[in-house]
Amino acid sequence: MKNYSSAIIFGIAIVAASIFLGKAYTDRNKVDGKIEVTGLGKTDFSSDLIVWEGSFGSENTNLKEAYISLEEKKSTINDYLTKKGIKPEELIYSAVSTSQKTKQIYTVNGDYAGEEFVGYELIQSLEIESKDVDKIEKVSREITELLNQGVQFYSQAPRYYYTKLADLKIEMISKATEDARLRAENIAKFSGGNLSDLESAKMGIFQITGQNSGEDYSWGGTFNTSSREKTASITMKLVYKVD
Image (cartoon, rainbow, N blue to C red; front, side, top):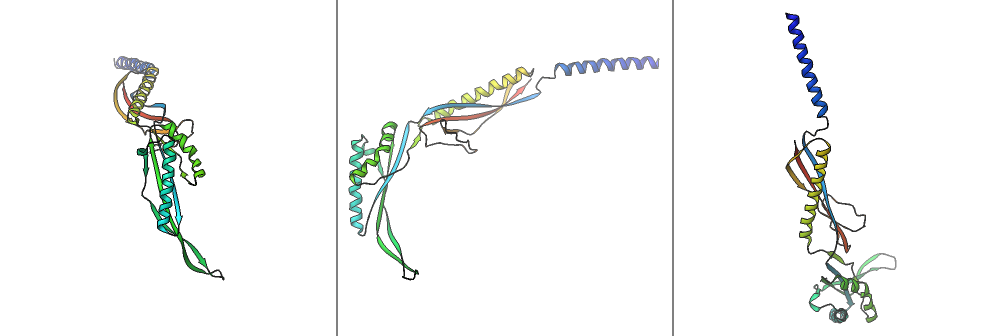
């Protein structure tokens, strides 16, 4: 009787093991618990706002004469830019910066003997902000024409911005979220599981780089202002439950 009972128990164990192994085999590709995916949203766009800056100055041993010369140059610059189609209200001038220039004096033996005043230097900056990107971009390239009128204008490279950045960011988040969801569905499908509820969503850093510039992304976010044509991208990290 004892041997008979042992045989029954042994048989049940074999059946249970077979069921367990069979289920393990059929479930071998199923995802257990969660799926974590990262989606990318990306688009190209053109800047619709340009900011261009430059400066000019004058020097004279007499402060009053230096200021008069600076005002004359300012008037010449205003006339030039007006003829180029730039409105007076678009011209933003900074306060005049004044400094004294000196030169070092040395004795015949080469010993330092102090400094000598050589004149005053006045500098004023000009900034133009406009949505007419083509026009300001063209003027920034032609500004050296002022040299023919006796004015040396130190031009900086234009900076480019986009005024609808908030709307663009929302669009990118939507694209990245959809991309991540499709990735999660494919993973669940090919792994034998069923995608369930979204457990969490985390937005990555918003990046703006110049188109075809080869710029590296930054952990703190890249915000390109040197390129007119830009590329915006953002990532979304989603975690789904899987049945």
